[in-house]
Length: 226
Image (cartoon, rainbow, N blue to C red; front, side, top):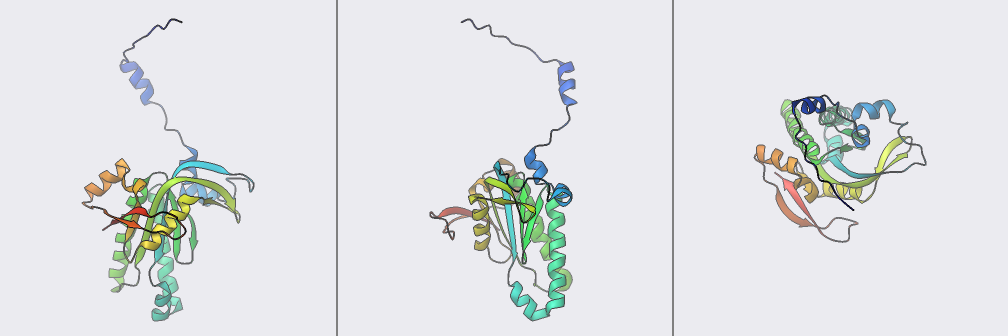
């Protein structure tokens, strides 16, 4: 067998041609687009289909002390507050190229194509809750946030697109570690190059700690973003 090596120098004409290529849309980016979910939320996958996704970032939020909030301010005021908080979070998720998968009580489950997008959304969510509290001159809305990235399974459940797998479980457990106003993330999120740049630009240094997650055999290294 003979091999004939070749070297080509790309000129301006080739660079100009390649520069005109339109960005392509991946299935992952489509499934994590809020508008697409709103319009086609029940039509993306057949009920018997399973779609393996190699990498997706999950963000879970929950309001700390929401039961006490209803007791303190009454059902009507508390409901309006929770609804306002959902509206703000949904807007932030969509602006960071993510999508809200579902709400569970006062909690939100959202997906993002990359870890840095999720972290960016989390930082904005925390600031938005601070602003809402300042407007009301209270501290009723205290948001706990957890983020994890990894493979998952996309399915259709209860007439909507949903996700299953260990990555989803870990993301939910990491959120449970958070206290009020905390953002907790796992190693794959913090170690992402774009996330590192974002945190450095924001002058935020994650604090590492080992934690036992409910239902997970081994302890994991998690990071609190102050």
